[in-house]
Image 1 (tube, rainbow, N blue to C red):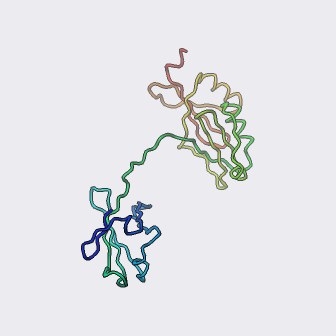
Image 2 (cartoon, rainbow, N blue to C red; image 1 turned 30 degrees about the horizontal axis):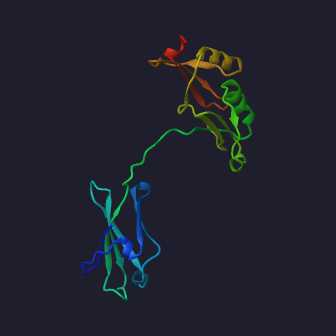
Image 3 (cartoon, one colour; image 1 turned 90 degrees about the horizontal axis):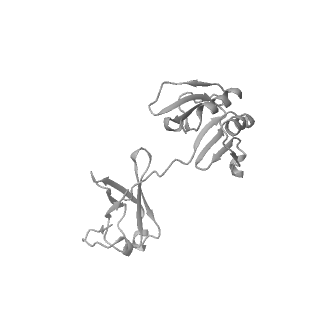
Length: 214
């Protein structure tokens, strides 16, 4: 990240005694901030303004720091620098859990459906989150979290889809427990049904065709 003053001197960021950090914020705005410690000759200025321009097709931004008053120790009114942003690609690794909403005070109904009918064991919520209500159900990498929403509205369209084994037996279990299942349009490679949890949230249950003969 080279720096250049009016005389053409190009000290490095490290020798100048400060660092510059840049990142893309919400709505595409670029935030530039100075990170302490600042060198003494920069502290002597009364105020600074920052202007920046991203080079098209590049992950670097040209930043110009403009001083309202000349430095006392150096004849500099501004510094131009190039700041790299986004050089490390962001990678989504996996899905940690699914969060569904539920109305307050109905945790026992959630347990009857997710733990007893779907056989996903309940796991204790962290103490600082347990006071909010709701419950978590987890088995290995399968994690379903139910969170309390005061102005609750069931998710009729958005839904999680669970891969299951022996869909016919699970469907019978759900129906006998008071959670009727309904068929849906065919999906190649799967047999699938839908069921609503006690709060009206839509749940999809899918069994791969290859599992039926096992």
